[in-house]
Image 1 (tube, rainbow, N blue to C red):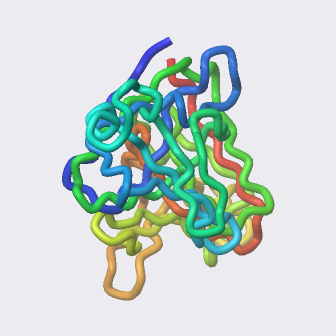
Image 2: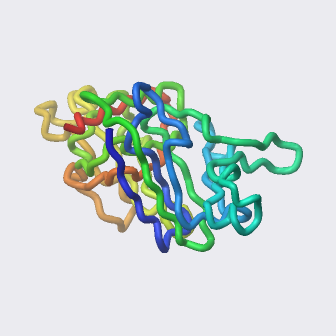
Image 3: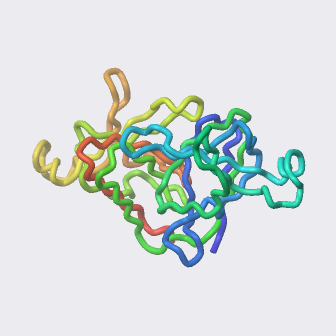
Amino acid sequence: MGYQNQDLTGQVSPSIGATFAGVGAETFKLGDITVEGFQYDTEILQVLSTDNAATIARYTYVTPEWDEEDFEGDGAAVGWWIAGKEGEEDGSAADVAFNPGQGFLGNFGYKKVKLTYSGEVLAGATEIDLTGKVSPMIANPLPKDVKLGDVACEGFQYDTEILQVLSTVNAATVTRYTYVTPEWDAEDFEGDGAAVGWWFAGKEGEEDGSANDEIWAAGSAMLGNFGYKKVKLTFPSAL
């Protein structure tokens, strides 16, 4: 078991995800994530559609301070809640479960949020199967930073598909990566393995070149754009 703190101070639109699984489970629950600095009536954590990146679920968090201010102050309101729009379901979200590698997009106007992830470290390599998904938000599920070059990839169409880093200010795309598989190396390059790996997918005038040494920080997420919907990523062991 363990825990990890993630300080999102100053960030309006962070792309994030848990770095542990639940104790004795292959998933994690929102209730495994504790929060400081959340403004429950205005700030949300969003789940995006894997088809088009539209927001499909919203969650908020009541801290002990807001429980004391706006609720009964007995601790019953503390925790995660579904932040439904009018006509949508609401209620406790503590038991809402997600697979490791699930990413979220924050909307934090007060920019004071700090998260604590707790649970068990994932054992061995972790495969994130994104088959059938066009726009998955993918988090590094490990409690440590990894290099992109340490994340293995299958099914990537290097000339059309990208993995995007989003701005923490407005969620616009700020960096794009692509991946050349051994199959595409043999098809379109020299076939000697030199092209296999992660590359910057820069637009005209932007940086390109190898991205294998780029860092995928623990608990940070990126947004995929996978038209062929065949991508699988494998993260190394956390140990």
